[in-house]
Image 1 (spheres, rainbow, N blue to C red):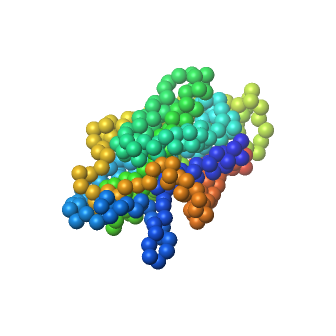
Image 2 (cartoon, rainbow, N blue to C red):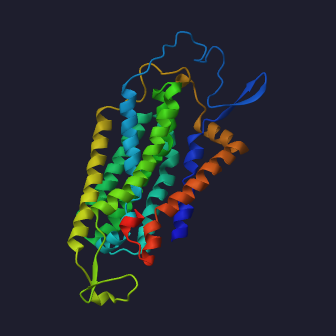
Image 3 (cartoon, helix red, strand yellow):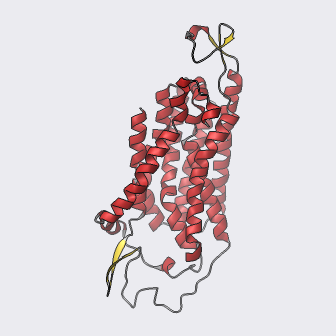
Length: 339
């Protein structure tokens, strides 16, 4: 099961490939140069128009905060259960395979919705994509927070995690689009870094907040605190903090759902596609079409080299770090030290 997690997580590297679908080559007098925009005829290009008025808007930081928090929460929801694996196994009657598979549901959702989400971002705009993303995450976290029995949870939680993975498809392509549309060239790198760091922050917070909110089950075996090094049959086990574990997990799920709903409402209230005036000339430059840009990217070996160098280490690290508690628990290491 762990190998499945590695395999599917590695597949999400396609988000980097499809995100750069508009890559093209520009001919100049000195030869072939890399460019991220199509070269238009002189009478059509926006770069040569002296009437283009450039302006930046303070609301760009609000938009960046919303999508960054969205990205942070999506990562936290994706990796929610592995840091509290023993608690989740008690509450939902899961096994280690179920814990590992909880990661794969989100990864599968990302892969499935990634191509249509790219099309939505570049044809309908960021507003439609972010509304869809926050709605899917709110719906997914709501399904996880429903107070139902384990029989229904065995279906609702995987569906919720799948929807959260579908929401992450927008996150995979949103960083560059938002920074290019709303930020001037001098701030684009900063905006993109903030956006990317938010995903890492979500993955880090879930290892701290999860074990802090949801306690690890305390097992008594024949009225003696059970040790990992001792043998104890299931008939003799008794969990003395079962209620606290159930309540902690309920609080965690409801909190995630509440934040997701607030994000969805904030996007509905205000999240424009683009500013009235572009922040730079390149923000108004016409891009390659989806199919044409994708074919162009696939033909460039340097593009593949860069994509694989980014995707493989990130995928292996993400798959390993999120299953640390499951791997180390048999050696007597509890949830809190793993976090």
